[in-house]
Length: 289
Image 1 (spheres, helix red, strand yellow):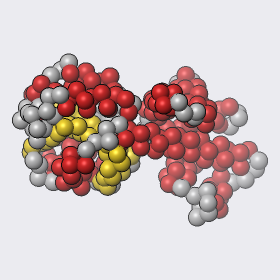
Image 2 (cartoon, one colour):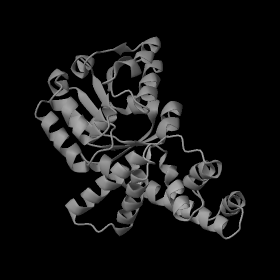
Image 3 (cartoon, rainbow, N blue to C red):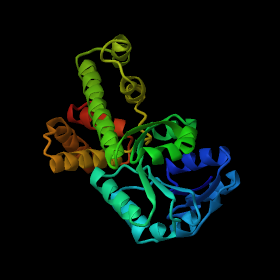
Image 4 (cartoon, rainbow, N blue to C red):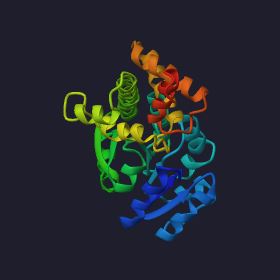
């Protein structure tokens, strides 16, 4: 298939690389062209503009920063005009469900199909092709995208337009809250005189075990907060979850508490750390930095 990938960042680069290696004709665009240039060695064609990248594409995939950027690229930078009628736009950005539904409707008016298909698994999952992909849209369009998704990870059709974003918000709520629980629990143990590493080992395999405890717990022990998923992105997702909760009349007090914790962390200069860097904020509050 002829596939365009828009947004060659931490996630877009490995996604585009995997599609190249799967044998697709891949066209790429990034606002800063230099970040997309390494894909030329993989066989991708690098374009100056997003509209040029999607011209004649069977499928266009976006991995952009937020809903406003997606809207700008689609409707003000010419992507919606350049995608052929009958094409499929797959939005892998994490945006608000209402934005995804709006984009789907506007593209539908032009005869272009839409899936909101945000992912979980970070850069490691993108590189390994093990992403969890949560897709909202029509079942027939999900089937059209199956071969593309198979190169990237495990895809699940979770409902109509916007449902993929709801699933991603649920994912990010669980991730963000669990990071805080693991960090606070390990710090409490250390403050009381226990060995954090041994506490993590002791509770592994029990009801408190999780990928967060295993992967991010290890990051906390090593104080390794090089960004996989940045603190600033986690805050964006928490705020999207709260905005969606307000839209549908749902009370989300736990998410609200953690939104404030992540916001405080960023205000204290931690925004470029991995989201497991919430550990640093909690350590600082307890004079354990």
